[in-house]
Image (tube, rainbow, N blue to C red):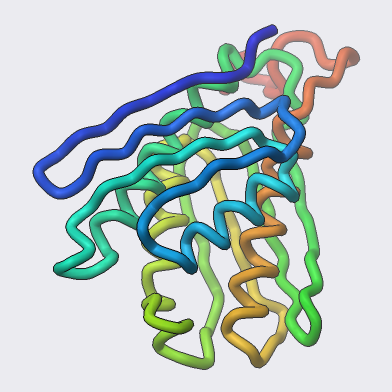
Length: 195
């Protein structure tokens, strides 16, 4: 089964071109013009073993918000397309990821219902020149557009960069596990018969 796809989204604020292969090997080529976001998406790709190419042009002369949110939207849409009919996928995964003093829990349900629970109190307003509040915006956009229930909880941590790394690595690892095909699953993992 081919589980890769491309999406282009163009608005008055951004243009996002994205390719995703969820059965890849963790290769990425990310250019969002936002250095910290590039770093986080590279981590997501590597630890989720997803092949991910992103070329983004946005109105970052205003701020980073539109670009970050729209990349979340497109990543959610392309991930949903890659899942095809969702037959045989594990559906659920929960991952704890340490990063030095920080520990996060990311839990996903590929349920057909987009929802975000985000309990991450960042210690600083910025990581470099990147606004930490945009991390929640990214994950909200992803969850709603992928129709995935996503819970992200910080167990503990002090350094905002370490906290963000823990979350994005865990996000990749949890999505990888939940999207794996299990040959013992007939149809979809739901008593309703659909996801």
